[in-house]
Length: 168
Figure 1 (cartoon, rainbow, N blue to C red):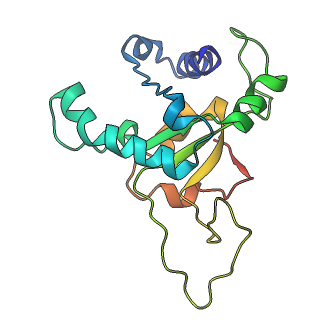
Figure 2: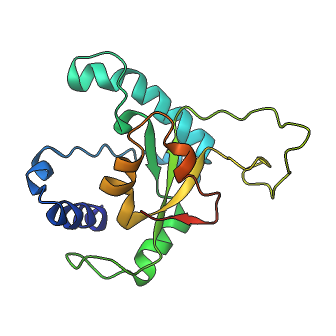
């Protein structure tokens, strides 16, 4: 979390937006009984439950379109290792490591493959090209990637099928 917050600070500083750090709210779920070793599907369902009531609780409003309520970040063992393996320690900004996190789209659902659709290598049992989540360079996930995903259909041009890592 310290590395992520450091990267957010670094990016906001570039864009002269450090004043936003004071209101930055990152909600972390650490329930190991549910999330330890969980698939992206399990994390998605957990996030859906939270996102169903969070806008009302946090902002006193109905369903929200903010990225905060549409996407969640999963740090599984592989992602954690990728971040801590060769990334510089905070507060040094990380502009070169290959660390990533999993960005999960809350509203993704598998579709019935078309007759011409190519079958891909299975990822968590899904052989479709789009699996509802992607690896994103952890340096880019908050601020840059969330900015790129601000529109309702912006997932599609930004999507990269794992194991490829999306970069802003």
